[in-house]
Length: 526
Image 1 (cartoon, rainbow, N blue to C red):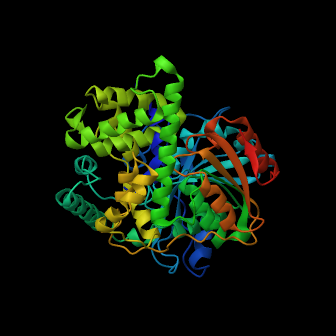
Image 2: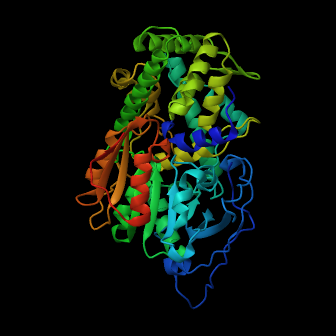
Image 3: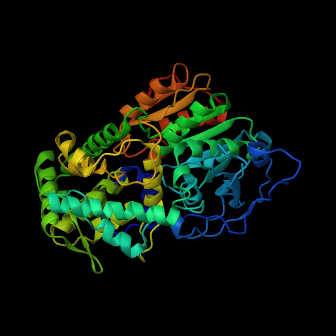
């Protein structure tokens, strides 16, 4: 069952959060016109006065994930791309700058235009310039009154991408055992992580201190000003909810209409976030196994209960730990890549058939499908090229979070992670040490998203979300503060709610964004 290019793009864009372990790109010729530097405003005011020159979009480059240029918009019109200059260091706004790639689809009804609706699709590390056209059909209704806008955050895609290892080096890195069984395997992993961090420092060291979420939030407010909007309208998904929360904290009085979907728990921290994901992916796997059982003889996996199907999966992973199987070409499927592929396919119920098929084929000695799913998670194309999705993911996470767990400290926490998930516990538990060798210190224990004085923000939680468990939505509502967070619950499956196909979620969200109708907090969609 082959995976289409559109499905691969959707998986890649949605899924980077897991690994602390039809698309478009900006034309290189789509440059802004720099404002005059003499005898005029300085710092941020000077940058806020820059004029953007929009031009047709070229196909995305390898860092953005590749693919064709975007299709024409429904009813005519085309995507436009440009670059915006932002301070590299906001503490020195008259110093060096970084160019941020932007993409836009203008509102159909300009006479009733509300403003720009800025999107971040998650990661961190996902390209918004390639992501927005991929999901454009889902948001076409919002284009009636909004210019749809997205961007490659600093360090991502075309926005001075963080670069670490080469394609062949990444093939070898991702084939390593990320769940070491003994001291020798632990040293192999630690040495590899140290080499990865050193490569990031060598290739992108000057920008690593500046790619964090707080700077990205400040970039969005500069973007608001340059686009000419008095208020900031926003749609953040997955990590995009954390980014939106930080924006609301920094600029509460600039918030207009904002939606957070697939919500990151702002209070979780590194260990809490890892445990939450372990539980979330385990819940999604339980639901997958039960769905398989409900289909009776159509289910090809062995077992007559959820526990038996999951025992089959853990036995398969244990077998792969001892001996990988053929995958794609000369590449083999390892235990780590199989776990990665399983997790990838749990992001959407639409991909459960691929998981069932991939597990069945791997049990028969063919690891190609699970390896393809793992490649999708890591941003690898069929020619061996990688987007910078995971490099940016590591750089942003490690400069955001202060904790620097060693592998020894991670090993001590494995019992807690194994209790959270017998399938994903080891993988998530060892993953908390992914920043151990990072060359740049982190910023916070957890982000401050308190936003007194902000307009209401719609916060959507999905009860079956594997990557950003449902509890994160309530935590975000509480952290935003009284009168700000408005909770909407979707009782469904998969990562996120707006694009799930649920009419209640879509209608409620559209009414809020297009008409300003704020739903009652606690509303439930089934």
